[in-house]
Length: 162
Length: 102
Image (tube, rainbow over all chains, first blue to last red; front, side):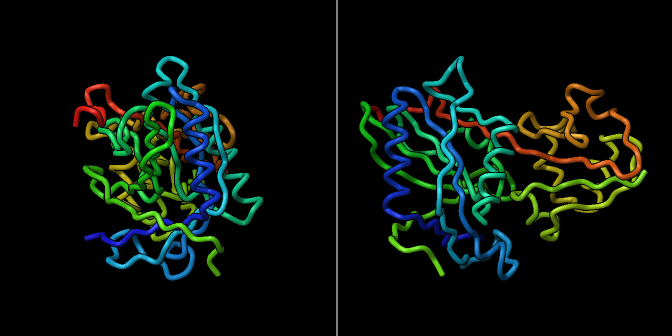
């Protein structure tokens, strides 16, 4: 059973996600989370451990929502965008550890559509933007059987992890 | 034919943390099948229950998207590299209740 997922980010990174959501309102924003995952890089932990070392977001890679047909309630990141994000992460000595997007005028909860299109391991940060103002921000990880998400607590810190 | 399959970061936890695997195959589909034979936990993340590649799973042979080739029937040769590249999608369902109604 997986409990205790943690995603750390600075106040600045958190504010940039919120601001991106406000800027694109009433459409969804999206982008990549660039950072480090100590469980993956250091001790070989799987995502089924009960006490996961934290994951940290160090930088963002904002992207353009490719869903022209339904940008109010859908976002899409192409494989080419993913490759660009991975290259940007590599240049900074980081990994793509997840993705963020906004839910305009909806709660920051993953939808069925989110789950059906999710990948395991990645952190999925969702920011709710209500009437143009950023509101709750949450993070989630898909569980191994693809049937649900584990909540991931977001910790705000002002220094990078050692 | 011996080909290399590049495993994307989110799936490496299901592949003994490996970033690639060597498989023997005649086509891209066989290469993916060989990969999921080695690492069975990968299957549900790459394929639907009826055995089709999931829509957000993109496969490249060297640098070419196989959708513009012969898809999974695309033949491979010794030394080819098959890359699995995610695409990302999401958003709320219109049937999900907005906060004001929940």
